[in-house]
Image (tube, rainbow, N blue to C red; front, side, top):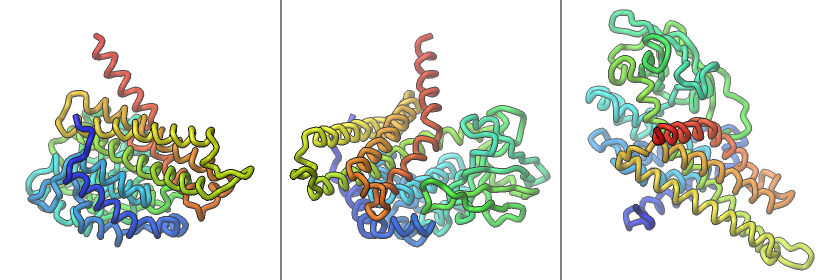
Length: 381
């Protein structure tokens, strides 16, 4: 178990932190306001190895660990949680090809995904299948050496602005055993996209529905065998939950740092805000909660790296705890700014809006509790 970073990990974290400070943070408010998807900046991040963090190096990946990824995504999120979160989704979708694809599939897709010349979206959720992902209905019917796809995906990050869709589709009967995973070129005839959703946060990445209408996808684009798709999707989500937790902590850390700086400058009743003991205690509690969540995240990431049998449960635990903590810390930071925290120019309200969705995506925090409860009950039998 690791409680301190080694020199290589510190260097990786500091590299990502410097990139966030220089390339992301100065533009984050404008990207949010203009709903700008900063593909050029993400490609710059990819040139530093952040487009394929835990992808094997024979296809251009960085071959780093999930622990390293947690450090990177937290650091990037100090500049903008939305941008960091999308890079994490791209990494998750790319990893699914690396982990479950054939050698031909890996060498076909991953070199350009690792540079982010191609950008990937993860397509699981549907209008009637969110938390109950095994109920998805998008149908892929075999027709010779192609599948013919019909159906719709919902809430797809990057949709319309990405090149590759890693999609879970139904090739068999009902339930998880009937689901397969296809890698789909976003320009495939019969693939279309809905309007960019109007959202509370995450405005620096588009979110659209993806529609399939008799879209023909080669059978050669299927990852693993038919019926393995649900297992592939869930394996991707273990890491995705760690990534989104890291993004929550990075955004919350920036909110805490902004609150500390503000409290040194702002006076009330003849004293600086940081001289009031009640507010000092609030800062202390925020820092304690963040450090506890960070320690939990590191433990879960280490468990996933070593393929611990409890890794799925620990990832769910860390996600529930860390995303709740991240949002609460950011919300407290807004409160400490008073009315100024509600103004966009201070950057706090954007962090609050961005972090709120982290308690929903990659599996809602209620589902995280369900995963943990099932593991506990099974273990008691």
